[in-house]
Image (cartoon, rainbow, N blue to C red; front, side, top):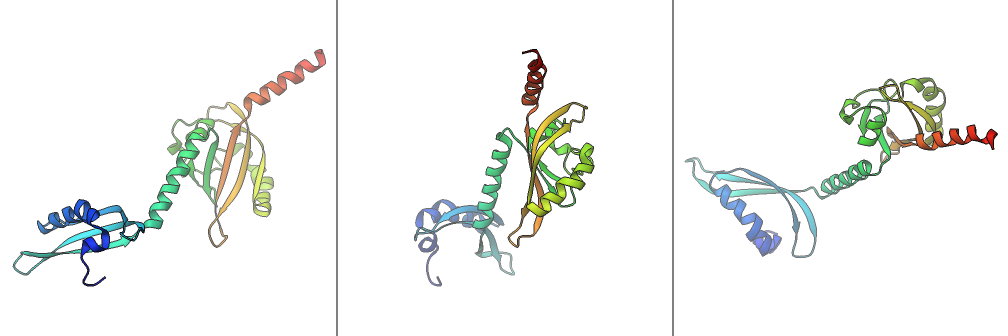
Length: 212
């Protein structure tokens, strides 16, 4: 690209609307960092992290501008996918949570937080899933659930969840392991469905059956 102009490389419209205004500010002494989606003249689109710095001479005058750009397209796409996941987790109506392999809670959505009796999900972050949210099922977790997760990759079963205020909620919980690209386990995840209404209806039907 040596010898080519900036508009040739990035396109005239991008140069006039984004790059040139930043260069003009930089020539006045500003140091700038910005991030943009760029569409190159060949149609290639990428997300760049761009830094503009004035070139200072020994007498303090500005003789030019240095511009460095780093392609962070993959990072941007990962952030967008994460945002989509968070929107899905919050709007799904199903409790969702994640914890480190030693059981420290790293994420819960609002639905799961509410099921556990907490108004703010942040109140559960960093706590042990074994001592807080599932504290009454510690023996079952270590004797049944964790061994099955480690051998089969997941566990699904009914668990009576005891909220912080003592109210019991009947749930179906699916525990599974999230692995990295090297197939190494990095965290536990779980989805929780509240089946309390269904359980109450089933119990009511059982009580009525002898009378029919």
